[in-house]
Length: 481
Ligand code: GLU
Image 1: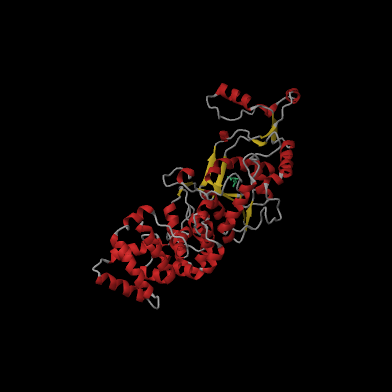
Image 2: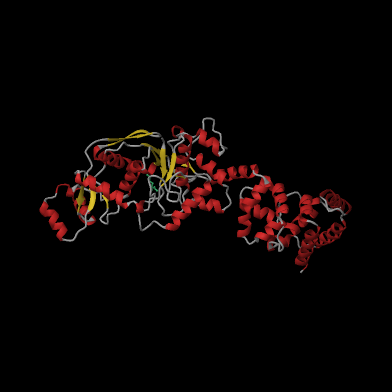
């Protein structure tokens, strides 16, 4: 049975690259009818925050990635938060120590650095195995000095081959790794140790993670072997880069799932887009439903070259998903965005029909849920605001005359429907030898505060007689002063 895990460290918001890792694990589990596990790696106690764990969980849920075992829902191999599993790491550490596969190291960072620098100019050359063979007297001395030891893994001298599903065999020379720390002096495991103990204890069959962890993998393999556990399969996915091909970071703008969510991107679109970051189908299809992805995804089809995160493509994909939704669905999804900018729930509810019709009219142009507010909010707002600079353009005697007449003409229209409205306005243009733009532009601006939008006559019909007249009147008052 396939068992995979997503193991975020709660030290920030869910990054796009990590969300992609979570998604690939999820898709692989679902395709293979296996289990997808969420594990919180919070042993970095200084940087880990409960709020980040909560927001990561919330964003994963928003993406629709459901896990079978995790800190919130439990499972047979719990707890699923590393700080709650310290007893396990200590148990395995003692085993390695008693079998002579790990040893206590008493050196300070400064001492190691001094020794390393005396034989090499590379400060980062690594540990020199100094404490591997200490005498009893040396150990007693260190103890007497009150030093607290770390536990180091005794790295055997051999080549290590990572058999990676995406990258093939990756070889590491015998000297590539020095004896590394597995337990810190405060008895908290290092990342390398905790991750292996958890993977073996949780019976993880495939470790699917970012390529940035590839260089850690030989260490992990050695620990599995030392403890006599089978080594899982590995798949290291290419990194996610920004459009300028540097590692995706804040410099590139929004990089977390939360930021896109707050900008009004849809979960379906994000799910689809993340799948395209480093994976592609044979025929380069771009739009996939969740079910299709669960069917078609495979680790073998993941690219070795880095994926480029392209916000413009995500926006395009989002607009495709917006189009495919009904006005009713969009209304539901956009409601929190209306509320965020001050529209009260009850107002929204009261004007639901109007907004849904407006959504229908603007469907092709709605790229995000924020656009919905911007492009339809003016239908229901009571206090429209006209941009001062744009308003100046319409502060002409002609515009005032046009709007005054139109106002009284519109007042007469019965029933207030788009055909009647159109007939009247077009006739007005003809009779007064005015170009349509000279009439349509000020009228649209007066009614919406915008210079673009849906068809003018439809818009007026939907706005209704009362609001139409009121807005023209308010706008006239505004440009007359
Ligand atoms: N906690 C690690 C990270 O956030 C993941 C480790 C792993 O997947 O093995 O990068």
